[in-house]
Image 1 (cartoon, helix red, strand yellow):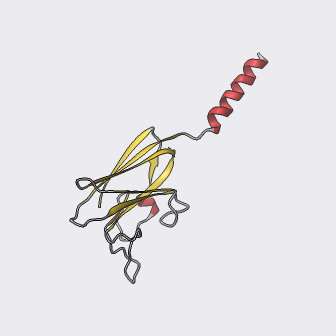
Image 2 (cartoon, rainbow, N blue to C red):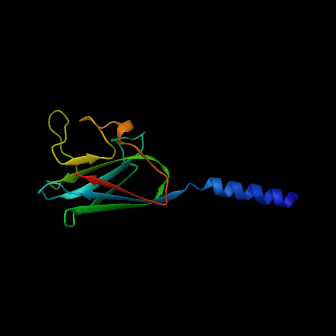
Image 3 (cartoon, rainbow, N blue to C red):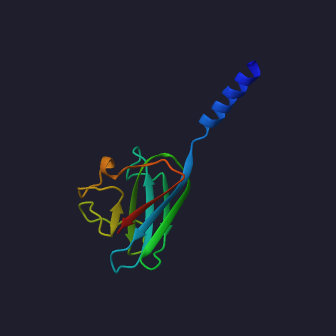
Length: 134
């Protein structure tokens, strides 16, 4: 009985010590005639819009870009993506800090400034696809 209890405790520790993860696919449809690579950032609340937890650059293929994030830990995230029209690998902004290149956020943001509570989503499945239009 002692051995069985020890095996059960060891099993529980092993299962709980490994974070669950899955694959997040971000599909972005282009809604303009401009050219340029698409950059996608996955953010946690702590680094929202400052430091992406994960990021990827991807090309448009027939007005569709797909970024795949494998082994992404289950958590709450927000997605930000922009189209780098001039090829400088950064989101250009005007003198007031507003983006001058096409961009999109996950969620249903109702304001010009992205808000975490409106942009976040729970990632808690083996595979999830988020579709955005830029």
